[in-house]
Image (cartoon, rainbow, N blue to C red):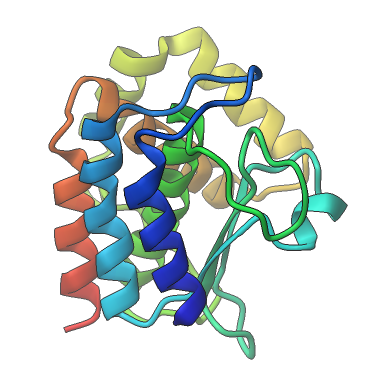
Length: 193
């Protein structure tokens, strides 16, 4: 919880901080919108770690959502511009996208009915047409097929590959739907009532 509060404080201060050359920091408006998500995670007692040791071990990943049986549920963000372990740097748009993506996995876990059971359910259950249209609108059919194939090649089941694609599309839709951070916050609060 203390770590989550320090992340919250860091996010609040980062809007005016100097940025490393590698990527542009997120706007103050975007940071403020995402503070709602961090507050909701804090209220729900879902741990959020930024740049922990595992980011050094899994350099191809920008984040993780843990929901495995026997492990504490939590979210890890490996920042785009990270310099060293446990040091938080300016959040970029990509870092905020990663936060949204991993929190969508939390919501998918909640949608399954029980958080922390290692199971995910689509947020569009019974609405396959809506999900397909959303994927086509945001990614285009070719990219969606490519991303799905890559997920399958990496060993994910068809269901899990669909869950990954859904999380990516929802997280990426923030560009067109800035209210998404508020919607995600509402979802977190509903899961942990």
